[in-house]
Length: 150
Image 1 (cartoon, helix red, strand yellow):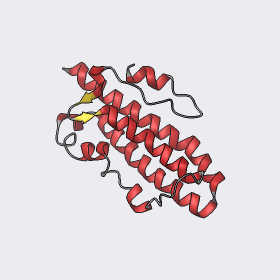
Image 2 (cartoon, helix red, strand yellow):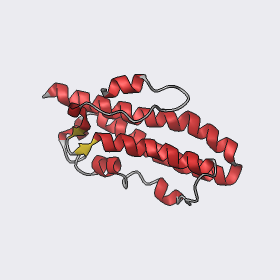
Image 3 (cartoon, one colour):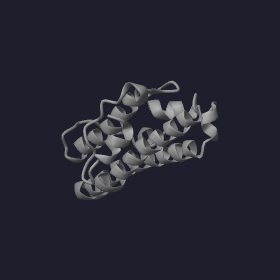
Image 4 (cartoon, one colour):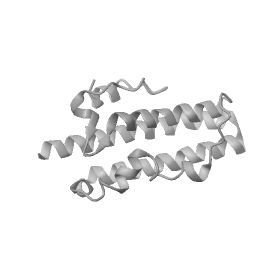
């Protein structure tokens, strides 16, 4: 399945299972795209498990909000930032969406602690899911742009 087909299958309620990407899309300029998608979908499960009290994990808001610690963030601030990818507007869009994703994830954790389960669940099922989808879409757009130029 390619990334754009998978994105079209993403319902409004919740993301689909992680796709098994076509070989040509699994890696992009040193980034394991499959692992990045899996990791970002895992964030949703971690947050949902915390919200529904199915986890004893104590998420550190300060760490959650850091967008340069995960594989995608390290790539965005490292190898990709030092390449011609950084010249594409799609790169800036992806980096900003990823930054906001991490800030919003931290905000969900804070909301859970301050306002409770219902408020955090609403955030997870709305803006968080949209940001997750936008990250994958923006990554796919960057990949498409770079590959059409070469």
